[in-house]
Amino acid sequence: MPLQNLPMSHPSPMFSLNGRRRAAALWLFVGMLASSLCLPDSLYAQAPAGGGKSKGGKGVPGGGMMPGGGMMPGGGMMPGGGMMPGGGMMPGGGMMPGSGMMPGMQKAKKKKKAGGKGVEGDESSDPDKLPLGYVVPPEPPSWLKTDDEWLFDPFAVDDTNLSKAAKKKAEDKKRREAISRYKDLLAKGEFTSDVDKEKQLISEVIQWKLAEMTRRELKYREAAYKKREELFKEMRDSGNNKGAKRDVRKYAMQVVAEHSPKLFAYHLVARLNAAILLADMSELNETDADGRNPAVRCTKAAQPLINLLDQVDAESHKQPDVVRVWAVLGLVRIGSVPELKPALKNQIVETLVKKLAESAGDHEWLQMRLAEGLGTLGVIYSNVDKRPFVPQVLAEVMVDPRRSWIVRAEAAQSLGRLQFDRDIDLSLIANQIAHLAEQMAQAYQKNPERASWKLNFIKLYLAFKPGNEDDASKGRGLLTQVENKSALASHKATVQGAFGVVLPLVEHVLNPGNGVDEPLTTLKAWLKNNPVRTTRISDSEKPIISEQSPDVPPAGGANASAG
Image (cartoon, rainbow, N blue to C red; front, side, top):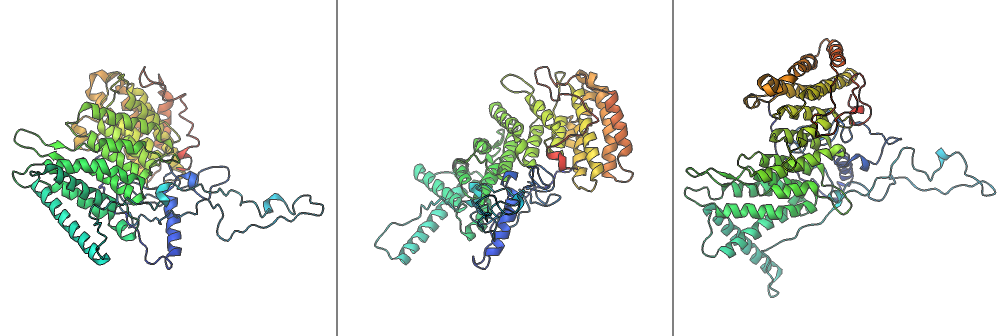
């Protein structure tokens, strides 16, 4: 059952505003919409009493941004494609920072009874109190309210004797000449006699292009994605003429990797385009294949992307999840480079493991991409102490009831993509995949109309069987491994048994008709008759489960409203 890779298109984030006065009401609406899509639950202005999450919140299918394009069931845009121009955000935020008062709410003085005792009426009618269940929103993060710009203009003319018109004309001429020389150097691919001066020119033009993406005016935000695509194309095409060198291309990549991270301090459009640019750089060759010499891929963006995942601002806000998703995608691309140095690949894997372990409060699509990336890279053991830290964190995520179904199913699929040896207890992993299938089926019975169920159950199938020819050629899938590896023969019966009871559930969800009652009953019986022998996937790791309770669905967490 092959799983087609979904095409991913790059977003073209722009802003739409024609006349501030006429569009004031529209901006308020769009800003509130953007806040609901991008802000974490803690920033929602209206929360249910008791602190519970409402449907569509972060980590719950039914809302939020997804990379890859299209829309999630229930609403929300996916980063990586299908974004409306402008990202749907108003300059300055779209919230009323520090307010906590809704428009039209006015304070009224308390009316005291004679003698100054008490307040008329009960507490519920106190005009000074906020409505029951209302939560005052905290200050929005900087990426929603900033108007800061990176002002960098190497073409400025400082001549007090020139009129304003003459100065502009001189600056325009200087800019045209510099860009013309810049493009000429990129086309030739090599520096001439004055290398330092030409490198300075390359650096200044690239920094100017990057700085343009941070400008707050509408026209610059609308053109930011074009600037990014233009810069990427210039690097890709540099030195492509027959016999040309690649010195200029390599230096241009170095400048982009060095200065793009500056954009992570400005508005969301700038941050998002910088992250996409760095992620895309791994698709370029620093040097092309020449005779027996293979092509050398660009890996200069690795460290900036690792740093991006770790960044927090002065108020301890992380970078937006929609931006961090692109950091994960870029790191996985770099980590998949065949000739990548082992030390850098290990650093990338360690970063993804750490971030996945810490991601329970992040958007589910970021969690999913982290889990997916670890399965793609295929590393199992840490480079320092040789612990199976990748299957350990994936197994912990798979059994975590705080995580959404799509994240847990993705972790299960990634476990099936790893190449195991006798040190890992595949029987425990297969048992817990079956246990996850039971929990998902119980939630499915309550709400079978959710469109994401099919994808969730397909991922459980792909934990056992390869999804395409490439996966098959690499022996991926738990079932494939126990059938082909003698070292895993002791787990064969359990893995085959788990697949045998999970498959009918997958088939019933993909082809709704008779419901899942019968296959769910069969699966429950199998779990009861095949209890786990251990709670650890390896002797060196901590238990992934505290107790086996196959008949009890998970309570609370992201999945509480997923069914």
